[in-house]
Length: 158
Image (tube, rainbow, N blue to C red; front, top):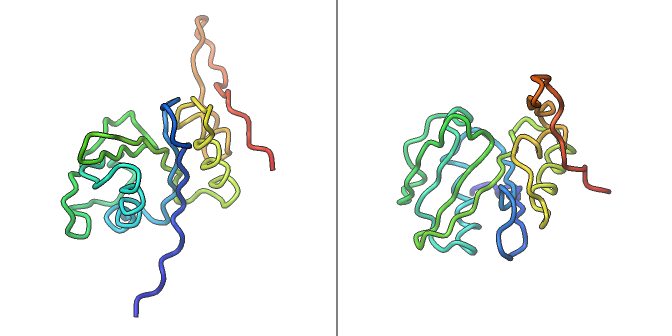
């Protein structure tokens, strides 16, 4: 008998006109993309219909050939697109998910998922992960060439 799967750590923004860079967040339990995508695509099919394509950061995952015999096209994203997964349905609808690193602490991972799924959130993946304490604060260069922190997102209130 198969052991029950742990609950999927996924949160999507409410159905509404899209806002911001991501449509929600996913916190996988391992770096085995083929194993992780089975449950994820089953759930996302409710919003997208049959999943036809998954674009991912190939550096963040162990090598993968196929997903449990499913017909899903796997495509590597550009190297600068970190912590993102783009899932496309067969009719062209697409969701862009923040991917929380598997090694994130319980609190930081939860905070990142909640921040990414807020309706008004428009921050990019690095900013969300930094605000949640998953990765160091992103920096940007201002017009004088001085590096400064770039962080617009507030941590969710508990």
